[in-house]
Every structure is written in C-alpha cells, then in structure tokens.
Amino acid sequence: MHEELMRRLRAVTPEEQRILDGGSVDKKAYTERAVFTVDSEKLLERGRLISVRAHTRFAPFPRHTHSYIEIMYMCSGKTVHRINGGEPVTLHAGELLFLGRGASHEIERADFDDIAVNFIVLPQFFDTALELIGADNALGRFIADSISRAGGSDCLLFRVADVLPVQNLVENMIWTLVRDTKNRRRIMQNTMALLFLELLNCTDRLAASEDEGEHSTLVMTALREIEENYRTASLTELAEKCGVTVSYLSAAVHAATGSTFKSLLRRKRMEKAAGLLGGTRLPVGDIITAVGYENTSYFYRTFSEMYGMTPREYRMRQKV
Image (cartoon, rainbow, N blue to C red; front, top):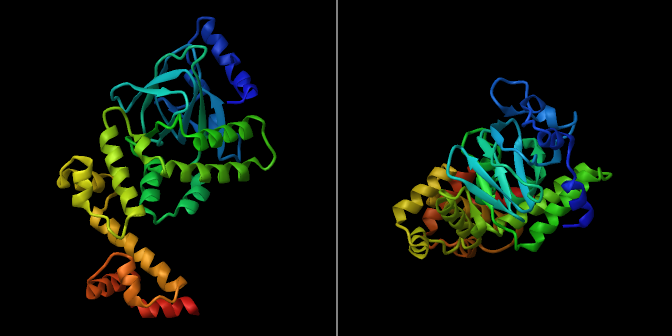
C-alpha cells in the first residue's frame, strides 16, 4: 500500500491515545442505544453513503452489531474476530471481511502494526455494484443477501491477499475517501462495482468463517458452476468433484439461496435463452441446444411459465 496512506493510518488517533492513557473503548462515541449497536449516524456525515476509518487499536473492541454494512480490510498485521459468538477468525493482511447489519462482532486487541480500515456503508450504496453484476445473477443474489439482509449470521471472508486487482481496487477506495477526492461518490460506487466483479472470480477464496468456510465455499462453487457452465452443469457431477454427497450440496445451496440447484440452473438457462432470442437471429431450436436442453417441449413449457409468453412471442416483442 502507498506509504502516504500507511503513514496516515498508522497515526495514533485521539481515541487510541485515551486508551493508551488507561482508558477503554468509549461506547458512547459509537451509539446512544442501550445495546451496543454501532450507529451509522455517529460515523457518517449527513448525506454520505460510505466512509472509512481506521480500526481502533490497543484495546479489545467489545461485542457489537452495526446499523450499516461493514467491510473490514487488513492493511498490515492481523486481527482476531469472533462473529456471532463463533470460533476465532483471523483476518490477515490483504484480506476482506464483509459483515451484514445483524452480525454480532467482537475483536481482540490490535497492536500498533495491526492496521485495518473499516468501510462504513449504507445498503443503497451497493446499487451500482449489484446492477453491474446483475440482480438476477445467482452469484449476485447470494452476495446481495449476504451483505444486506439484517439477519444475525451474514458475513463473508475473502482470503485474497495475493489477488493484485482486488488489492489495487481496495487501495483506490481508501485513497479516494481518505483524501476526500472530488467526485468521490461516483468514483467509489464504480470502484466498488469493479471490486465485486473481481470478487466473483475469487469464490475459491471465500469462507464465511473458520468453522463454516467449507460450507460457504461449496455453495459459491455451485453458483459459479451455474454461471460459467450452465449448459452442462450437473449437481451430481459437481458433488462428486467436491467430494460431498448430492443431498449435502443440494441442502447447502438451498439454505444459502432459498432455491434449489435445479431451479437456479433452470433460471440461468432461461435468461440466456431470452438474451439469444432478443439479441440474435438464431432459430429457436438452435437456442434450445445452446442453453443445454434436448427436450423441446420442456423448454417451451418452462420458458412460457417464466416469461408468460412463447419464445416466438418474446422475440417479436423485442423487435418492437
């Protein structure tokens, strides 16, 4: 990371100095509520959807939730977290931790060189990112649910320290916010969208937590299989490749997305077919084959159920 940024982030803040002088984390600086919920109104200037602040060092940060979405990036050193009361999770330099609004979170004491930044983000800030990756995209739905649903268990941990594009994009966002760059909101929203695209290529680096990591990675592997290999994707073959049973993988996907692997795959194929109907002159029979179907009757029935019209009618409407 650029040395000027690191110099700014290393600087001891007034809050940290009070801790070094014998104090502790002042909850009143973060919330007026009886329950320790860090309030966005305490950390965000009026009218802003995103901000960044250095993580408070030299004292444990007590268990809390957030009224916003938090993205924590480790610049150097490490921090140890307990999320939703689970086992300790270590965030190393270069890694990203997404925390939903309802996730409970506590952090062990960080030392001088354990430098992390917290992005404080209101849910509507992610509109541009989700538009770019596609709201009807299976991966997009999974990530959107994980970061924006106000439940108690939403967290995503990306171990992407060696993924240079991710590191560059995060540094650009920190730079933009720390230096209060002109047009920062537009820059940040577009940079976040690019970051989302890069993270979609890093599903093999994803873990919800140390004890749930295998489960979450399996789900993301399944969703990526649908996105990239929708024509030939098979739950049975994928389960065999991942070394788990079909029922285990099926249940994991359903628990994470609310839909079965089969229904997600069907929707993806129909979306691709609709795109080909509207954007090409390919015969319907060729489109059916292109999206992975052999049973023409099944395709026509499924397409009509999803779009409320036949493929021919859909194509004609796209020409109007």
